[in-house]
Amino acid sequence: MIEKRLTRDGFTLTELLVVAGIFVVIMAITSLLFFRGRDAVELSSQKIDTAGRSRRALDALTPLIGSAVKIGGSEALTVIDNTQNDLTDACHLDVTTRENYLDSSYTSTAAFDAFGPYYRFRVAYEPSDAAIRIYKLLLASGEIDPSVKPRLVARGVLGCGFERVTVGSVRVTILTQADRADKRRPGGITTSKLTAILVAPGSR
Image (tube, rainbow, N blue to C red; front, top):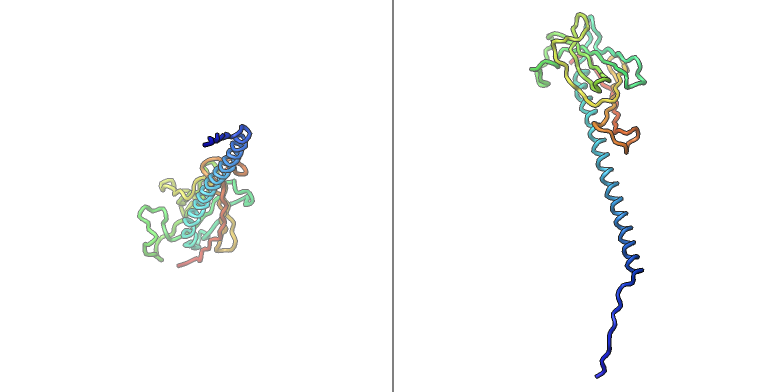
């Protein structure tokens, strides 16, 4: 019997380096895709949050403006926005209605009283607080009633604008910013701009 000696060669150093290099490239591509995907999800969630807050603010203003009526001494809608092209300036919208939206007992399902008293509200954008609030006004003097707590409509507002379109309608633009800065966005912050024309039919 002839005994045949078998030899088994191992991997060379060059082959090991090639395999390691391929592995490093695959890991680099996988990591890049993972982090890009994660960033996209985070940016999308911030965009959804800011857009949602803008939408909720407009939803809160819609019934208020929709119930506006004109009475002897007050217009249904009065826009005070001196620089409409600059959304970062303070501005406000005064609304006359028959419904007391700031009353703690008010509900949207309450029966409408056509013979009830009139109320005057101010939707004010306050750049210093980055917020939009609703204040109750005194019908006689047109000043804010300090005894009634204002209602917060939107927070984190980078800009807001009101523009009277017709006698009974107003264009509202809200620019909402994210709660935290993000250097991946232009300007370093996520924003959502939403514009809607809200109409006051004048009566129920």
